[in-house]
Each structure stands twice: as structure tokens, then as C-alpha cells.
Image (tube, rainbow, N blue to C red; front, side, top):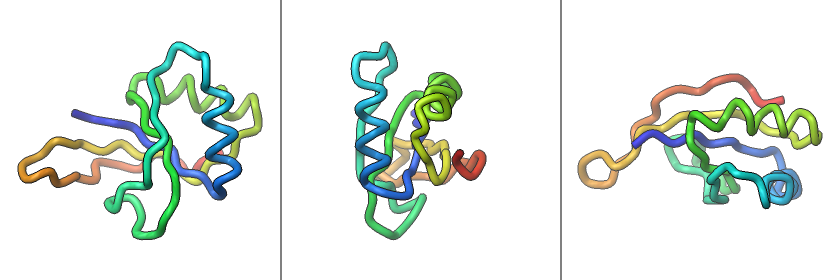
Length: 91
């Protein structure tokens, strides 16, 4: 299964993103940044890849800053995660 992830420069921006998306029709979840994206700690927003462009547009409109956008293929054998691609550098 493929998931999209947005990463944020600060915890404040991650919380702001969650607040902006609350009540919208998109399915999302705040999760720790996957190790295949970064070895540093942090919070990422996980969503469906098909929703990512609309979510990114909303972030631009509401001034939510992101570091990057990633798509990962998950549920591979032995629970590993495979880095698929990075798109853009955030806002």
C-alpha cells in the first residue's frame, strides 16, 4: 500500500496542519516521521497519495509550512518500508 507523507519544520507547523485538516473529508493521521524519510525525530502527516495535492493546496492557502512530501510503499515483507520518491521541497 502506498502512503503520502508531509514533513514539517517544527512541531507547531505539524499541529497547525492537523488543526487545518480537522473536519475535512480527507483521511489523515499524524505519525512519527518514518526512518526511511529521516533518522531525526519529528511528526509527519500521513495521507492517501490521491489526496496529497489538495491537502498541499490547502496548506499553501492557510500558510502551513512543510519541509517535504514523500510517497512510500508499505506493507512489504517483514514489515520493511521502501522509499519510493520525494516530491518537492515543501512550501
